[in-house]
Length: 128
Image 1: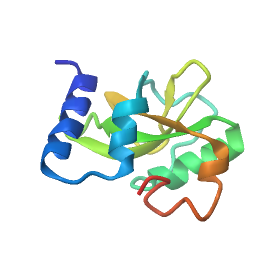
Image 2: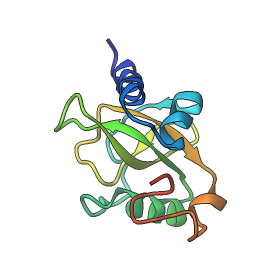
Image 3: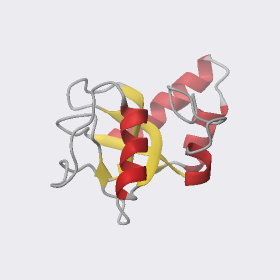
Image 4: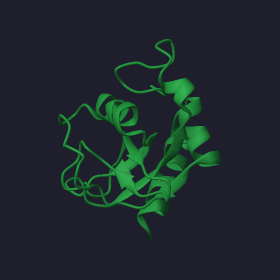
């Protein structure tokens, strides 16, 4: 089983036991896989455990797309975690929070007008 299949199975398992919010439903319908990569030169590591803030700052400062979804850390294998990261135009992950980068990223590119609107965003991300 691939890590993306693990993420999808996890969402389906959750939905069979709980009344899920729109975030998980949207992930199943519109989520896509992104390619993990080491942090590129010229982009500094952000503060651990502040992925939503870190990703917002990179989007504003570097112009990279902001993404939210489920990712699997290289340190806690097997458990998909609600996470935020950035992506380049070719879908390569730029994750300033996790070093080393995660092993799998499955999420949605959030349009700038949604994550920049204070009414949508919380400390736990756009979809929290």
